[in-house]
Every structure is written in C-alpha cells, then in structure tokens.
Image (cartoon, rainbow over all chains, first blue to last red; front, top):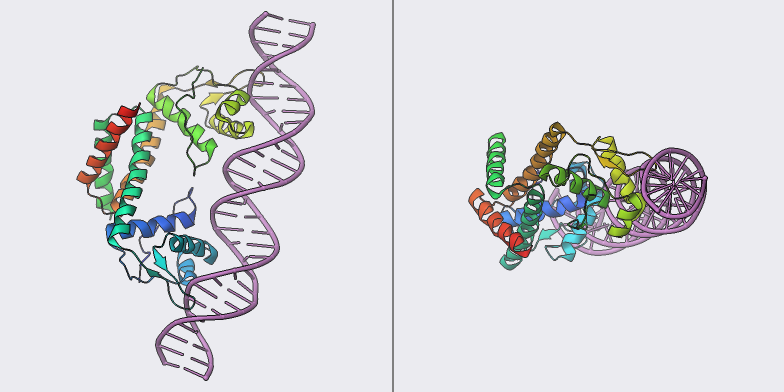
Amino acid sequence: MISFDTFKPTEGTPIYQQILLYIKRGAVAGTIRDGDELPSRRVLSALLGINPNTVQKAFHLLEEEELIVSQAGAKSVMKITEEKIQKLREDLLREDIRSITGALRQMGISREEAFKLIDQFWEEEETES
Amino acid sequence: MISFDTFKPTEGTPIYQQILLYIKRGAVAGTIRDGDELPSRRVLSALLGINPNTVQKAFHLLEEEELIVSQAGAKSVMKITEEKIQKLREDLLREDIRSITGALRQMGISREEAFKLIDQFWEEEETES
DNA sequence: CCAACTGTATTAGTTCTATAATACAGTCAA
DNA sequence: TTGACTGTATTATAGAACTAATACAGTTGG
C-alpha cells in the first residue's frame, strides 16, 4: 500500500496535480513500484482532508496516462514499466530544471552563485528530516 | 520605458502572477530601475494579447506591495529602494531554490547529479539566446 | 484649450478548481 | 451469500482567473 505520509500539499497549485506529481516522483525515486496498491479514493480523501472527487480526478488522470489500472470494486494498482519510468524521469527533470535555471538567469544569478545556494538548501533539508 | 520583449507567459500559472514575477526579477537583476516608466495598461495588454483587466490586476498588486506608484492620467512608475530589492532577492531566491531542491530530492536525485543537469541546461539556454 | 492618452471602476459571462451529496454496480473477505 | 468496501457517475454550488464591454475622471502634449 502506497503511503502518503510525506505528502504535504502546497497552496497555489491544484491538489489533484500535486497528487499526480507525488506518485510520479515516487515512481522515479523507486519508492513506488509496479504492482503497489493505492489507497481507495474515499480513504485517501479522508486522510488528506480533501474531497473524494479531487482524488478521483487525480487517479483518473493517472489512468489516462496508463500509470495505474482500476476496476470497479477493487483497489487501483500501479502499472509501470522501466521504460515508462525513464520517460517520466526525463520529462519531470527537464521541466523542473528548465524552470529554475530560467528564474535564476532572469534575476542575474551566476551559475556559481546558484550552486552555492542549492548547496545551502540541500543541507538544510537534510538536517531537518 | 520598461520593455516586455523577453516576457513569455507559460501555461499553468496565472498571467497576472507572471507579470508580477517578471517585474520583480527584473528589479533584482537591475534591468528594471527606480523611476522607470511602465507601459500603460491598455498598451501592455494589447502587446501581450491579454485583457486589460488582467494587467490592471498585476499592477494593482505591485502598487499594494509599494513597488510602483500610479495616479490617474499619468503612467505608473517604479518606486524601489535598495532595501526593497534586497528583500525581493531573498524572498524570490528562497522560494525558487526550495521548490527545486524539494522536487529533486523527492525523485531521489543526488546533489552531484542535480549540478550536472543544471550545468547542461544553463549552457543550452545561453547558446539559444 | 482640448483631444488623446492615462488610471480606475463596475458589471457580466466562461472556464477551472474544489466541495457536496448522492446513487449504482462490481469485488472480496468473513 | 452477504455486507462492507471498492470504482464510477451525476448534479449542484462556490470561488478564482480571465475575458469583455463600458464608463468616468485625471494628465499631458501639441
């Protein structure tokens, strides 16, 4: 059963999109594997304190992307191949890295300065967990 | 007159927020300075192909943050001190860096791997401009 | 001066996000 | 078998983001 213990929604972006990202990043990291069961829509919505329809929207999109399989009555299950994981990895990384480099360059930050800042935050987050 | 030549809106985030960020990042970079005139609401909306009210929303927020001054009949003007720029710089960088490090760590990317990826994209964007 | 530009305000309608309340049918374990 | 859980579907409501059309008042340059 996939755990949502480390899922912490942020304001500003749709929750259903954040659920999508959480699953995809977990798959890329290897903490979510092929065959893993997802919590039911009702259970997860109660756990996160959101509406069941919001969870349904996220799961429905996962199904459209063929990352999970669902059938009425049974729990949804992850269905991911190595190939899909590689594609996810490339897509997610490209988008993330492109956005940060764009932002930093717009602010006139040098590459060296950027590395220094990232180093700082990386350690901060390591020590707080 | 502040130029919006390098402004390219992205799908997924509100346009008025992107205008806000564009101005703030320009101020941090030093390409937008105290006293600089902004294009009028009507002119900018026509230039970007969006509704005047959307531009008005962005400018209104800039006014609330006391980064610009406006008076009926005259063009809006940047009003930023060194102190405000420093605060902007810290706030924007913190948010940007935190989001990227969070995303990469969720995907199990190492710091070294992250640096390598950023290096790649940095050069890509330099060569394309 | 005055016409053309400026900022500001209001009202209306569409799409998207999220909530809310149900309802129905399939699965599965006791 | 059967009852509790599953996925799925429908309808309604509310707020935010964005578009659209319009109006009014202040400024500024020719």
